[in-house]
Image (cartoon, rainbow, N blue to C red; front, top):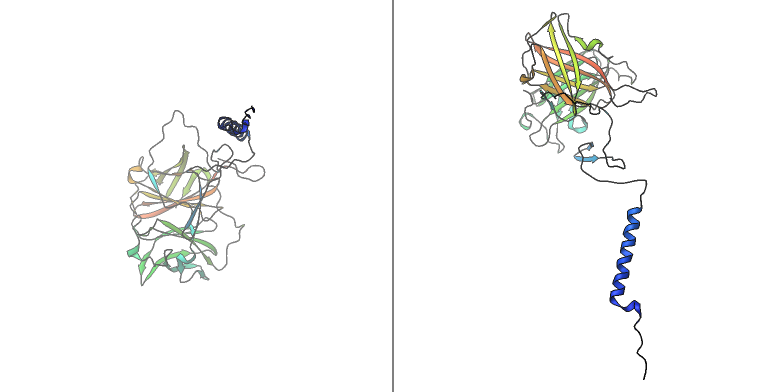
Length: 337
């Protein structure tokens, strides 16, 4: 009688399943123990850099290994024991302006005379549709806000452009030679508010090393011998507040609303001409006679000039303040504020 042959162990179904289970556990432990030098994480965050080219938008977020967003500029200060004041102003449009390109065309953009220039421009959307009055929303009493600042940050113009003879008109006094940065702010009926930047030149372009406005001493700006304004800045968790004290002949003065606001503040970066912010103060933001407050998101490290416009005695008065956010270190590199 023949002996019954034994079935090989490897062919038994239960044993095979057990071996596979052991291998899966070993592999999972090995993967968990591995730690490389670089970790790539994708997660939603509000801290992002937006780069625009035509109609394409790319949001770029750089995260360190621990996944915590980092960035340059103002950090959040300690605010224990203090209450944040209610924001009394609003910011119009994005921080970063777009190079005009084909979106804005000037009849003349190079000038020889140091004089008031009758600027004429046409505005188009990304589909080459011309943006006349019927294609634009009204922003603070106007369809088009036109801002002009000299490269040296010492001359500023804010003009409400008007539409005549199928062209937008904005006459501006340009008494100095050099480069003027022109900003055209519009809000198309179809699309988001946008600000385009276009460089205008009188005689010749400004040299890169041209001296610019120095920080304003004692935070005091004088519009004329009779009108002055001091500015006080305060930093809170996610924004910076600007409190202005406007005086006439050394006494608090009555400020009259204009352009649907009590006052307007336009901020420019000395380093990056594409960085521009506009904040408006609501009528309710007047904290006392001659006192006006603005607020905006915290600022990157750098030097800025703010032009604040208010209506006093039936005339718009403009006060300029230049200030630094953060200080350069020994190597000349900016530190966080």
